[in-house]
Image 1 (cartoon, rainbow, N blue to C red):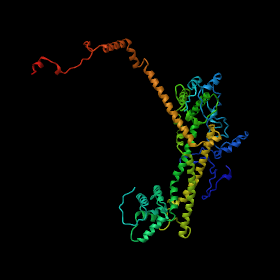
Image 2: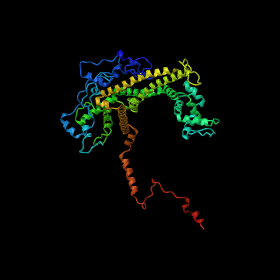
Image 3: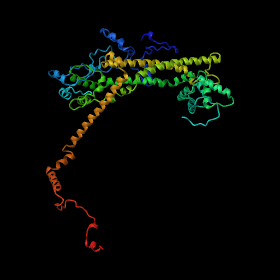
Image 4: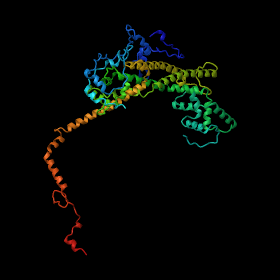
Length: 555
């Protein structure tokens, strides 16, 4: 890199230079590794556009890039078609209303994904054009697209409103006693107050009006104790620069979480691009859909916008009324039996589609502003301590009667912590810029024009691909389940199975005899029924039988 691009080492300088890091190996944020982002991805994509017009200028190879994927196979030959039927089929098949990529310009420079677009490396797909023409035959004008904690009141001075008093009282139930708050705040002792406690204290910062009312009530009733809520606010109001202390403390405790809110979506977006570029099934699906669409439209498009993948389940053939996505699944299982369900191959795409990358940018801007404000708040605290002590502070102290801050306390380590946060923010800025530029480069790899790249939102793109992969997996599972059922049915009907042997043993003669006997019984009237020992007879109770003994016992 150029020497002029290096940043200054002054800790108070707030200058995020885009070439802050020379080695890419330093692009690591906690456990997230971004070291494979190239230095050339710092520049905007439009900067490389001017160099594409001059064919004599070769793009500079990045220093020590990660190994590139194997070169794509040679350009596929034109798809097979029947020239003598092309004009006829074009007029009587359904059309796919996709957004055709009119011209696929070469990539402006060597990218992480190769030197050519994804469409240049697709394999040709041989289609059964007669079957497709029959399934998607156009039929006239018909279209198929269609708390309160209960405390007993004490005789004390209370000037706060009921709502404000309840909020303070509820917060006090989770905080240490008010007399222990000032020392912990001065030294920023995390063993006394944790992150949640600091957030509660930020909501309890008293206003000037509240402090005035409490002081007036205390002056009017010097012998009456203050209520717990009023006593807490008065104690907090006596701490100088309370808001700055709490803001600074909260930033030091929350920085890791705030950084992860920015870095984690970027990491999933980077993984999503890598998984899509490496997915063989994804390329097979694109090749199959492109071949089907070119046949139905009667054209030779070189690619299409990927948002059309979400509409494959809405297009149905005119005979079996099955969706086009089902036919794509069947074709892939026939032509590419080694293909997967796609959804399990691109898990990062699903995760990336759940983030709002405009919010990521906003969070990063707020993180920078909070870090800059923290330096200013630290300066204010240092100046206040110097004025209170009458000179330069040798041992960092809080204010009033607070004890000196220990060497290992958070207050003592604040300058070093803020310096570290500033350095990590420089890494985060470089990561954010390079991931977004890589996403734009990935869209160019997919054949998108620069105007389409500017209009494409990262989360919308990832959600479209994720939803399609889920639909494809569901349809694929249904096809495989249907095939398994048919296989089991054919196996059950085989003469070598027990069911097949029983059917073969039961001759048609026996069936005819049983049928004739049943029909004869049904046709015979009840009055002419003969006693048949083979049929069950009705039973009677013994009391109904008139025998010689029963006749003699009658009165």
